[in-house]
Length: 288
Image 1 (cartoon, rainbow, N blue to C red):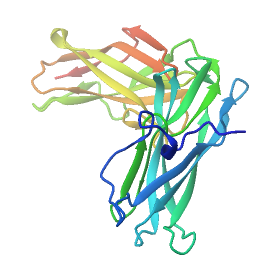
Image 2 (tube, rainbow, N blue to C red):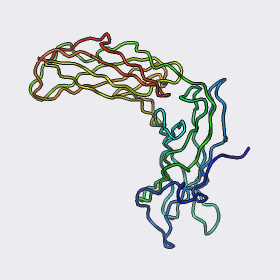
Image 3 (tube, one colour):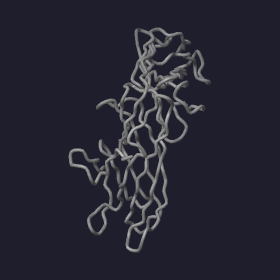
Image 4 (tube, one colour):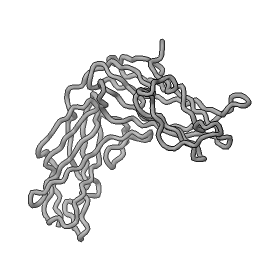
């Protein structure tokens, strides 16, 4: 099977991944770190019958003789046509540099696994590497970014419904009455939502307070190679389909005392479907 990926050296100027940062250059004027051979293990995958695991590989070459290892990260995202849909998947990596032959710079071949879900916004979509970085301890840095790094197609099921709210609760240490000593206060809510198909992506909680004041706070899923987080809270189950998000609402200094209550909640899944709830059931907080 041919790989449907594009190595930066073979791209035209219009489609090539662009260099970001300020990589150090060697004696020949070229960047000290080079990223090449970026490719997925498949050109296309059909996940309608079940989720799949796709492997991304690439090679990092470092011309700095004092460098022993490289680190970096891969950012991946699904696209429906030209539109990016869903959260960015962020995967960190570390690799040891190994000499290949006399006179050649040490290199490392790295690989990461991307779990491909069954549901998305469109029947046919594309997963792309949106950014790939590499750096060593001596300050050498290289990054590839943009359309053209690597991609594969996916046939998937379409998600049509937005997430379902399970509950809005107070954070573990949040009291129902809070004293503002003059510097403003932070109200800590927990929003729990379920989306068994595409999974939760993001949301916005709006609370209403005294004198018609309203404060909106956005929150979203974050996958950075460690356990998933949503808002300010970590997820113990490490999945998208049933999550608790920590939402902290900052009430600024000088705001009149009074009662605050959630007035609107918007929840969006990884396929871009949004469900809006006005005046959801939720506990009130009195600021005095």
